[in-house]
Length: 69
Image (cartoon, rainbow, N blue to C red; front, side, top):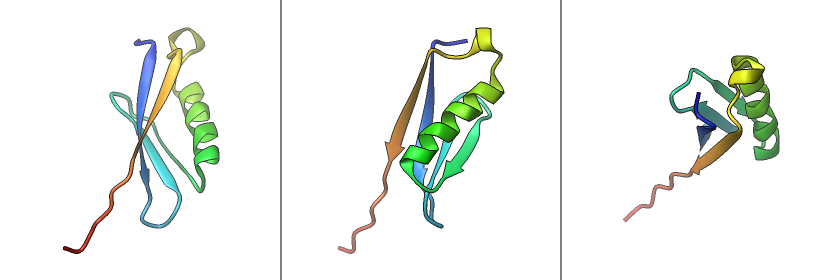
């Protein structure tokens, strides 16, 4: 297992945020970024055995804006 796990974080159309790990089947969502941080760490803890857990979890926030030209 890598020492780092990357999550792609997007704003949900319904409000709040959703995160998915790249390279692992880990998905979670929350209403705020603070709640999402906690949910991501909980999901990582549930997904990996203690000896296999990544040392770092990186959240990459993607924000899409549509402009009318």
